[in-house]
Image (cartoon, rainbow, N blue to C red; front, side):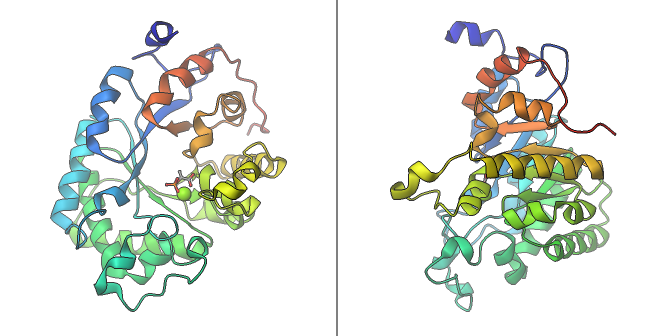
Length: 302
Ligand code: PEP
Ligand code: MG
């Protein structure tokens, strides 16, 4: 069966009737792209930037970050790259140990409901500004999309955009700005129509969307049986988000684990997802599955 899969390497990602859906990679380190060269990927749908920050006493400075981000974008040679702003806090603890942020409180007994993702970055302006400067400079090297994690209101997106615009002006950068919302908090789905007005794209983070919707800690073994991706609530939220993106005319993709789940490929195709982003080892199986589906739109077409 492995040999059968190899036939899908370096092939276009499309359905039996020719509908394209990009299959992209979730990566944490640039070295992972060596494997990507043998598979053929349509871009990077999620670069989790926090791994660059782990195991260091101080955050990497702007130059260090810039070099890493620029190397990834150059390596992709014109294919789109989506980089996520730091998503620390919650299960991704790191800053807790950093003494220069002593004044920050991390949400007591419920870190997943505390200062995490964009909430934390907006309170650590220096961290946010440095990362945005490094990313925006790297964006001169090829198509870059910046993804904002843990968004729960429009103001967070507006603040990030305002800062990004200011940095572009200061640095005299030319490349177009693309900032998208990670849809991973149920509230973001409920206000998706409004978020679409302040977002260039959406990317659904199903790992957290499931956790927060079903009130099931994604890392708690004791409730693992209640972590149900096929719960009707999840289906409704995904449909609603796809519909809002369609109405607004912005691209939408999926970057949580569900993106690679074989039971969902057909639904995502039919919901007009522009891309599914997943671990590299899942790309060929999903490409094969996609090639056997017949695209049958589920959303009202504009
Ligand atoms: C998600 O929440 O689905 C996601 C892709 O991000 P992470 O798993 O890094 O929280
Ligand atoms: Mg997440």
